[in-house]
Structure formats: C-alpha cells, structure tokens
Image 1 (cartoon, rainbow, N blue to C red):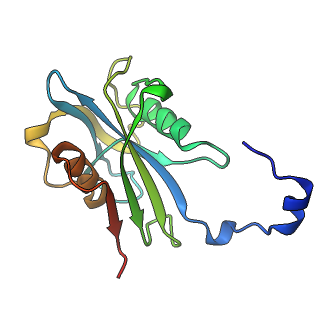
Image 2 (cartoon, rainbow, N blue to C red):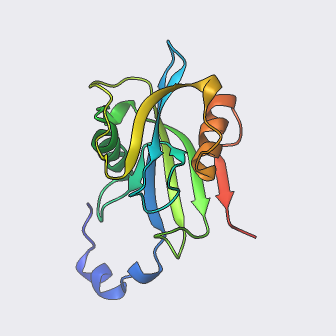
Image 3 (cartoon, rainbow, N blue to C red):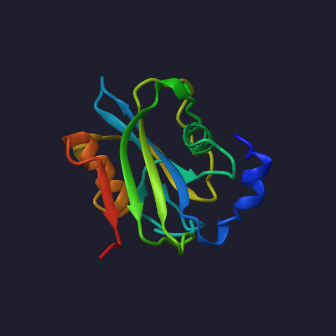
Length: 165
C-alpha cells in the first residue's frame, strides 16, 4: 500500500465515514464443461439468505482488489487462482447495501484457470458451493451479481448501476 507523503497526510482528512464499500467477485468459468462456480447463501448469511451468488467478499483496508478476489475465492471455495490470470468482467455500482449505507463498488473478475478442489469453505455462511451449468443458472440469484454473470455470459454492457435514480 502506498503511504502518503508527510504533506498529503496533514492535508487530507480520512473519509472513512463516507467511503463506498469495495467488493470483489469472481466468475470461475470452466469453458470445457460450460459450468460456473456458484454458492447458495445459507441461514447465517448477512443478506439474501437462500439465494445464489458468485464467490464475493469485502476488501480489507489497504488490500488491492485483485488480492481481495483471490483471497475471497480461496476462503469460500477452496479454489486458488493466480492474480495475474484474473480478467475484469464487470463492475457493479450500488447506491446502498446491507453493510454499505454509502454505496458499494463490486469489481467482478473472471478466472478460467485454477487449482484446488471445490469445497464449501464457509459453511456458516453458505448452504452449498457447486458447479452449475450455464444453461441452468438458478432464478433465485442476488440481482446485481446475476446481472454481472448474465452480461459476462452473453456479452452485454460491463457496468451495472443499482439503486440510482
């Protein structure tokens, strides 16, 4: 993380109370079988209980977004990706969220190469983690990440705005 110069540190006040939450999501797409990794949010999830989603999670303070994507994917699914192999797929800009009263920005990456065996790394949050055929994506899906996945699969616009008038 870049440290501010002494002059910048004195000139800038922290804006943490007004910051937009930064989030990373990963579409793991097995092109040979045309399947993607999805997780179903469990009863312990903070929002969207029972709904399907991409592997997704919040960035830690000072953490580059690509590192967030790699970390969250590994924690939630057991899959490991090379940060250099991730490609930008979509951006979601939400006006507000459950833990983001000042909005959120989700950067959605796609991975076509990974190592590891798929597992449910956070069973207290997720009912299941599995491979799903792209022709059988569940309807009960978190709307913003469903939009990102659909637009990735069908070549639509690469930005989703949610909750903006």
